[in-house]
Image (tube, rainbow, N blue to C red; front, side, top):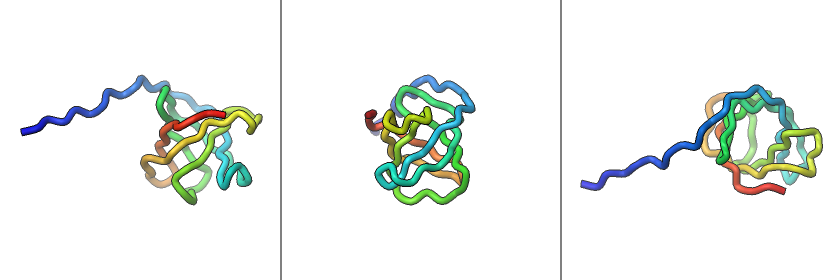
Length: 88
């Protein structure tokens, strides 16, 4: 019988950091809050539960030229889990 091990989690850091979520290639900008973050992803609280698509970018500062591209890996109401897939 095969035994599967879950990939070890990267340490998460709890925070309450305001951020901006960019959708549609950066044309739609929405406020959000980073609840916790690690080297590989984050848990994000949305202003509302509507989130079109499974890819987005997060800007941790008002400078939306510096963003982290993400893929949504889970959702529950207004909270999502994202995996970081690249930065610009």
